[in-house]
Image (cartoon, rainbow, N blue to C red; front, side, top):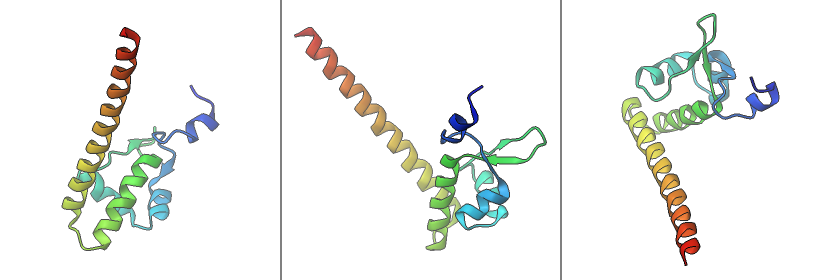
Length: 109
């Protein structure tokens, strides 16, 4: 198991309770539940069954709250954010493979 400092530095570590997560993003716990129902975020559960959120999930939730506050329907906001996240990951992987291929081409020369 990683030392506590390493875990809290990890964007995927579920460090925040529902109440604290809601406070951080300026929303209600019900809003976080609805994001879970819309499949935008799936909080981990503590041994006692309580929802726990990571910083990465809070960034997604904050983006959803921002879009909903601007008038976007919750389901539409969640779908947009999921697509944005998938695009970002695809671009990151594409760049990784492109750089790897360039390194292989240079080694073959």
